[in-house]
Length: 477
View 1 (spheres, one colour):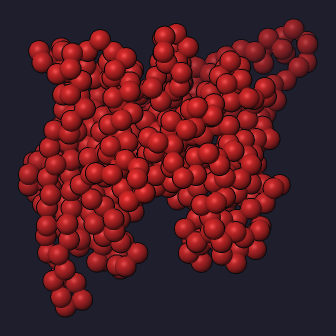
View 2 (view 1 turned 60 degrees about the vertical axis):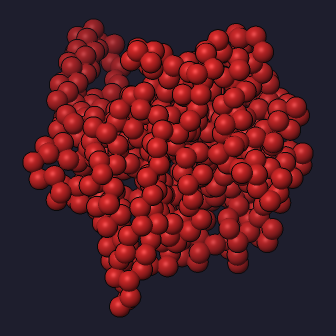
View 3 (view 1 turned 180 degrees about the vertical axis):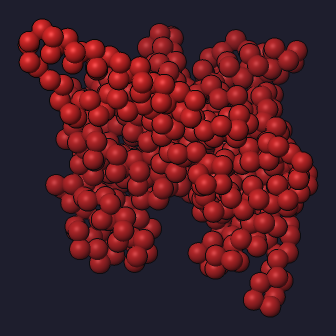
């Protein structure tokens, strides 16, 4: 369907971007169509007694592609969830998983609910019943379909789903692997909460390692000092902004929320701002900067990097011409419509696409799934052995210094850092960084080396489509 604004819907936008890339391959029309279409969508309606009344809820679980199994994708809770949105998100999950080489097909789910309208115990009852409806149809299963958090959900909901699955499958030794994004004490993994925002940071770091790529966006220097606008200070936007400001020297000059935007040209204190938003529900009356009531207009403000990190379609045909950022990184799913993408490419704006930029979540979810199947914490077997080997080297260096009379010593900070073996969090961050670097390289090779490819989004789709096609062909399809 076409929206009232005259633009394609979210699902149509994904298909248009897919078709543009697929037309550059030599795949048969039948194979292109097989990759493009959503395999199935299950709609469930269930009742839960709350506050003395029975409330009926509508939920969705879409499976876009089973070229690899299990299929993977988040569950979102939002009042405007609908089938087209869920199917578009499931398609993006297919391409995302293929791009970062996680062994999953694409899936997505949603529940039409505003979680802010319910108490914690009520949300648990709703989540448990929703999970029950999906589990009994194998739409949640460690080997078939593995959800994760998304908009409106988090560790608590994932822990409830895992518990419900275990109750219904009491002899499944791999029950914890039925869902990712759980809290660490319930089978989760260190670093999962921050993973998508951390992945955005790693994606930008990789982009700025290549002078030729920086030049495409008009940059000659690295991330330090870059002015950044972040739209949406939820889990993804918050962690991306926090890491970029604290570790890379970026200045977060604007943050856009649902009730407006806050500005400080010298750089906002992201941790303090997040605390204010959590306590007051928005940025209005925030004392840390200048308030702008029309938040979406701030997308058009002057900056170096724009990070849309909330919902789809915020950059569209109506505001794309006014966007001043030379570099956009899509931390959200589908924040740039297909029409806006055309306008921005013609302007020369560089876009780091969503199917790469926000793949940190599914990457670390993959690590959590592997951890649950292996039944052992990462680092448990090798950490102390690693420390012992490092200590041998440090002790030998210090002995040589004493015996030779040179008199130099290693700095305590170096010794502490070098002797410390990698635990689970360090290994997760290392694996995520390696994944984001490798995926960017695969895109970059196509961007710079393939005739007709002028943007990273088309390059990302091409890599993904050809990998999915190879999987189907290996199956004999």
